[in-house]
Image (cartoon, rainbow over all chains, first blue to last red):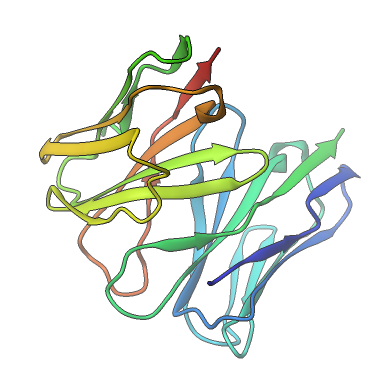
Length: 112
Length: 116
């Protein structure tokens, strides 16, 4: 069974601090996605990484896919209150199956 | 453009009652997914459809749960009879057919179900 473990589970920081969230698995994924979910809403895609070692930047967010395509990290620089939310990683296996394997998420609170 | 539409947004019912959740996917999307989210288990895929045909229902908890997609613009998830342990937020998501490795899923706002 494929599993994705996210850490930390909860994170509370002050505005302006940096943070890193991790997503780890023993399985290889063909791609990995990061979503952000705000209270009362559904998850929204932030980025998809496909190639081992790939790094993508989205403003103050930096996403990296591990060389072996088993793990990923999300780094936020100078966090702002608007970054508050649940960050979810989701991995897709090989083949045509559209099923995603989801982590439990990291709940981030950025305090002003 | 309208996103994924779900109804109702909130549902409170008593144990043993039938519950029907509804979803309208984004027009033109070929894939539709039903998820359940709880604090303990996170986001769990229940079932997904491609062109109205169920492809993977391995996540459906038991026979009390059933899902249908009679046409490309409508799907239902039914629980009969409902139990308190079914209390969760149920999400519907849709995805276009332009697959490859960029299978973005677009989520609706969810239905918060409480079974008393």
